[in-house]
Image (tube, rainbow, N blue to C red; front, side):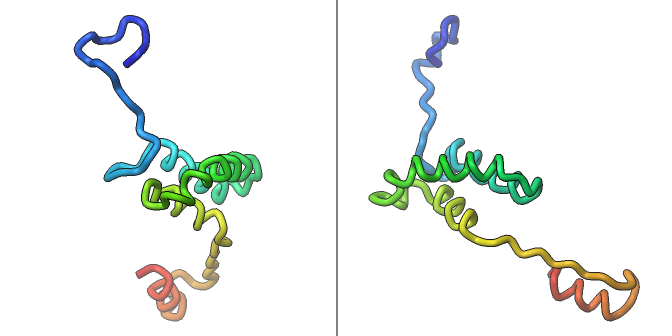
Length: 104
């Protein structure tokens, strides 16, 4: 902690920008923004995601293993989401069969 009045027992708390066993805060934020973009169907989140990914691409290219979650975000951002609509009698056998196929 580096703010005024911090606990003196804690020397320094570093926020990692690379993923390790635990994804970095930046990676989690980008993935969450991608999810929000898909749920909200809004362009405002895509701007944030694209700018963030562009800013870290120079670091990811030479060392892709340093940010696997950001690579996941990059891949997801390039994929078109798939939507499945099943219309039918909820209790009908044909509808149930389709649901079993889509939802394992």
